[in-house]
Image: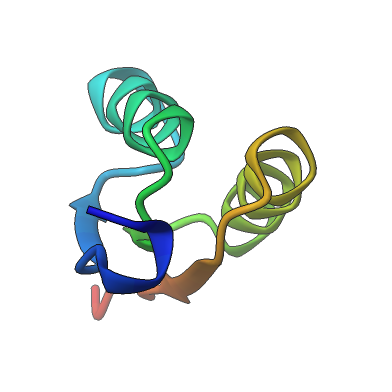
Length: 67
């Protein structure tokens, strides 16, 4: 499967822990990513790093807590 035909991978909890590790592994394999977490700034840093290191598209979707 070429990079252009790979589906986007949706990763929740992407800014830390297992979610972040999964994001790096899928980016390494060339998947474009949809990154979701509560931390806007941490998602931006992660997205920028993945784009530079792996040349993939990594869109971010920060979610705010409604508490």
